[in-house]
Amino acid sequence: MKKEEIVKEILELKKKRNAVIVAHNYQVDDVQEVADVIGDSLALSKYCADVKKDVIVFCGVHFMAESAKILSPDKIVLLPEIDAGCPMADMVTKEALIEEKKKHPNATVVCYINSSAEVKSECDICCTSSNAVNIVRSVKSKDILFVPDMNLGSYVAKMVPDKNIILWEGYCITHHRIKISELERAKELRPNAKVLVHPECQPDIVAAADFVGSTKQIIDYAANSPDKEFIIGTEMGVLFKLKRDNPDKSFYLLSQGLVCPNMKKTSLLSVYRSLKEMNYEINLDETIRLKAKKALDNMLEIS
Image (cartoon, rainbow, N blue to C red; front, top):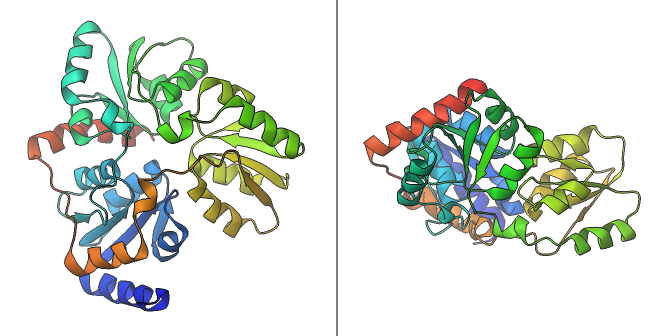
């Protein structure tokens, strides 16, 4: 089928299934175009918790669809590409976290939303890149076990120096690969451009940036800034919304390596097949779901 035909089928199936399509900012342009809502992990978590639909088609990666199911157990949550995972989320397991918690019995466990439902079930509170600083500030205990992103954790530690943040050695393979030499070269080529990066980048990249924030915060900063040129240090999918919403501004990707293969697995065709065949449904053990929900609820109460 041609693109126009696939889009038409998607819209008809969406109505038939009483479904909503949500897409992360890192999805391919075609998928973002058919989505009802585009956002970062925090925005999509909040939306899925409240949406009045029978089916949620989550165009993202596995942990995101799990989060939607945790918050909306009465809804059918579909992940169009079942093998769209997250290497960083895989860097922490429930069993390994239990062992690490034994070493730090007085620490509050703050887990990045980029983690599995099983890992969330062993945590006290979740966070996203949008609210991680506020979440950690809100925690009463001084000791914080932060999992699994050591780069985001390092950024939070600098912003909240009165906390003792114990870092898990995990990272986003896409953001982590950016080199300071690439940033310096980008600034040489575009000396008037502001550098906006994600806190999943390594500390030297974060320190050299003009602004550090989540995908939504980067999008908002660019929209509200009087500047006209921006070097973007996050996954390339964010360029779709940046360019669409700011046609009078120019955006340049900091590194050609800023591509998440898992985020790019979802296509228009896989969204169509997901709605047509009701694939792939996310189901969770109820005990795990309820424990993980407590960590997410604790986050949403603060956010």
